[in-house]
Image 1 (cartoon, helix red, strand yellow):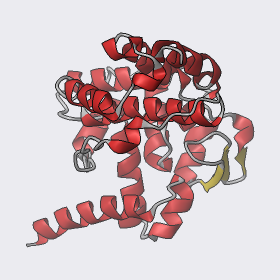
Image 2 (cartoon, helix red, strand yellow):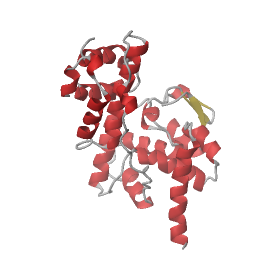
Image 3 (cartoon, rainbow, N blue to C red):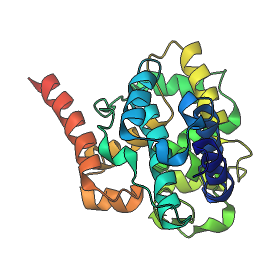
Image 4 (cartoon, rainbow, N blue to C red):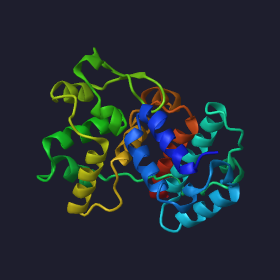
Length: 260
């Protein structure tokens, strides 16, 4: 059996390279390659070793970050067994996964949104990206790949998504923003995230992330536009209605608290 380290490098070069998330995954593999257990042979990696790594990593990483690293290890073992001809079990399947925190329900106030969009510190490009996120509920990667030819009448085709391609309806406001914006955007998702975080820090907006804009937009579709969960799923691309129901219920509870 080869060293786990060599298998990880092979996985990076043969599997990760074909993923849309390859940049992020390459970074995670780079971190994994620094771990002592990667110098063991593939068949010597047990569930006990993986559990020890999980517990050690949880001391300095968020549960979601550890879970992503474990997902890479798990997929590597699946590929090694199914495609590389190694008769081995997947040790990740026999351990407890890190418990993730409750889903975020951060909503920006009107005052915060006004600062983020119209503040002097916001670049014209980032201003357009924020507006599109709020009007469409699209993920940042989807927004950055928009091209003029994807617009057809009052719809927008999204060819590359987290799940499968979809076509979404556009509000008049969204269409106006897209028609008056130079696209595609020459920025990476990471650059958008960093710039957005800097804006939040500059304007003293606590605990704000770019992805919160997507959640806020989808909530607005349900609360303000009175769209059903099924209708919002067509726009958002979610495959599980429970995700949207959680967002909706959290918002409604806050509204009820105000009424009470």
